[in-house]
Image (cartoon, rainbow, N blue to C red):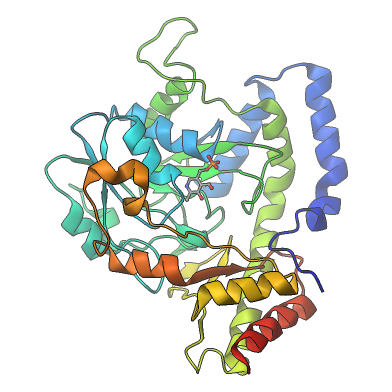
Length: 371
Ligand SMILES: Cc1ncc(COP(=O)(O)O)c(C=O)c1O
C-alpha cells in the first residue's frame, strides 16, 4: 500500500465545482487585482479569526516581511525568534538588515518558551516572532499580556484555525501572519498569505505597505512592495474557508488515533517513538503530525522502501544555516532545536487518511524496530 504524506486530490471533490465557479466569476469580471473578491475574503477571514481586520497578501513570507517593514525594522534592530522553523521566519529579518536573535525551543512542543524569549530580549529588540509550529499556538504565558514587551508578530503560517485558551491566532500579538501555501490546512491554488490585527492603525500601515507604500495611488508615504493577494486566489480561499474547521477536526481525530495506535504498539513505552505533545487548553490543528524517532534516518529509509510518505521538518536549525554564519552562532548553542532536527519525522495526517492507512503506517514503524 502506497500512502502519501499529503493527498490534496482527496479533498478536491468537496469544493471543486464551487472553486471553478468562483474562478469563472473572476475571469468574467476581468478584475484580477484587489477588488471585491479580495475585500470579501478579508472580511470573511477577519470574522473567522474574530479580529477587526484582515488583509490578503501575496504569501506567508510577504505577510511577515510587510509587518516588519510596517514597523520600520532595519539595521541595528534585533528580532527574537526560534531556530526551529521554516526559513522565512528568520529570513525576513535578515532581508531588512536587522538581526535574528534565536532562543531555544521547548522539547515537548517544539515552540519557543516564555523563559527563553525573556532571556533573549535586549535593548535593541524591536519584535518577537513566535512560530505556532506544526499547528499548535506557541504558549508564551504571561508574556503576551506584558504591557512593556516588544511587538509580537505571530507566525501562524501552519496554524490556521488553531486556538489557545479559546482564542484564535492574532489575539496574542500585534500581528498574525498566515500562509495559504497549498500544503497548509487552508491552501490556495498557488502562493497566497494573510495578515490580521487587533489594531486598525497597524493593519492600515501593512495595507499601504503591500501597495508600494502608496495611498492614494502614486502618493508614496514609505517604500513598500507589491505584496497583494490575487483576486483568483481570494475567490478560491472564500470557497475553502468554511471547510477549514471540518478539516482541522479530521486531522485532530487522526492525531488521536495515531496516539492510541502508537501507545498500543509498544513503540512509545520502549522509547522508540515519542508522539507530539498537545498542551492543555490548546486546540492543535495538526498541519503536521510530528513524532520523535530513534534511528530517525533509518526509519525514514524504511518508510521510503514501504511507499509511506514522510518528511523531516526541519533537518537543520536556522542558527546553523550557512547564510547566517555571520550571526556567530555555533553547534551546541540551542541543543533542543539541534536535537529536534536529528529526531523529528512527520507522518501522514491529512483529513481523508482513514483508520486503515493509519494502522498500516504504525505497522511499518513496528517492522522497522522489529516489534
Ligand atoms: C512557519 C512558516 N513561516 C512562514 C512560511 C512562509 O509561507 P509562504 O510559503 O506562504 O511564503 C511558512 C511556509 O511554509 C512556514 O511554514
